[in-house]
Every structure is written in structure tokens, then in C-alpha cells.
Length: 171
Image (tube, rainbow, N blue to C red; front, side, top):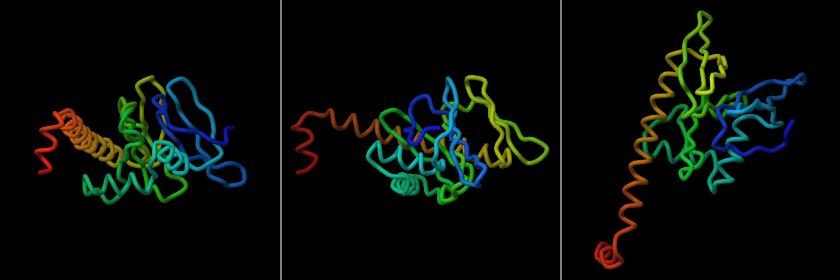
């Protein structure tokens, strides 16, 4: 069991799991393996956001500002590495599982109102929410990615303008 963990390009999911004492831990699914971290998933997300100079609350506020999504907003962990995650329930809850958008290959609803998510490497997990909720989260995360990446593209292309042109903009 690990004490600390930063989300990286190989992180597919942070699954909430209870230990024998009832404490919420994180089962980390990476493209090439899985292991447990002695923190709840939202704490791992917050630590990772802080590693990239923000916080979970800051990322949530930023998403809300861009998209107006007020419930279960997707977030970007790192703009530079294009790491986007979405929560399956309220991120304020310790038992909130987080999914990396880029690794979701498919998902299908089960008879018991759970959803099985298949990742690009063939790994599957089952989460206790409906197919429609996962479909909505996947779509909202894609929408958020487009908005943010378009904004970042525009910002980087305007910063490559000549110093004279930039000066004209501010005069």
C-alpha cells in the first residue's frame, strides 16, 4: 500500500474502496497495473492538482466558470499533459470514484443499475451508477476538453505574436 500518489499519464481510474475498518482507500488503476493508496480518491485528486499548482476546489471552480456545470463537474489535472478526470458522484464524498476520460473505450449498463466501464487496455471496472450518468459524464468531459483546449490554443497563438503587435493590443 502506498501513502502518496500523483495522477500521471498512465492513470485510468481512482476507485473508492473500504478497508476492514471502514476507511475509504483508493484502488489505483494504471495502464500497466493496479495498487492501493492509503487516501480517499478525492484526496489523491486534490494532491495531484496541488502537484500541478492548483487544487481540487480550484479546478472545480474553473470548470464551473467555463461550462456552468454545477454538479459533478469534470476537471483537468494538468493542462500541459491533457489529463482530464470526471467524478461518478459528488467529489465532496470520500467514496467518490474518478475516471480518466482518455482511457474510456466503452461502457454498458447492468441490470442492477451499475455500469461496467471498459478501458482502452481491456481492463473493466463496475461502478454503482447508471449507464446514463456515465454517458453524461463522458459527454460533459469531452465538451469541457474542447472548450479548454480551444482556449489554450487561442492563448498560445496570441502569445506568439510579435512584441509590437502585443503592445498594440494593450495601447
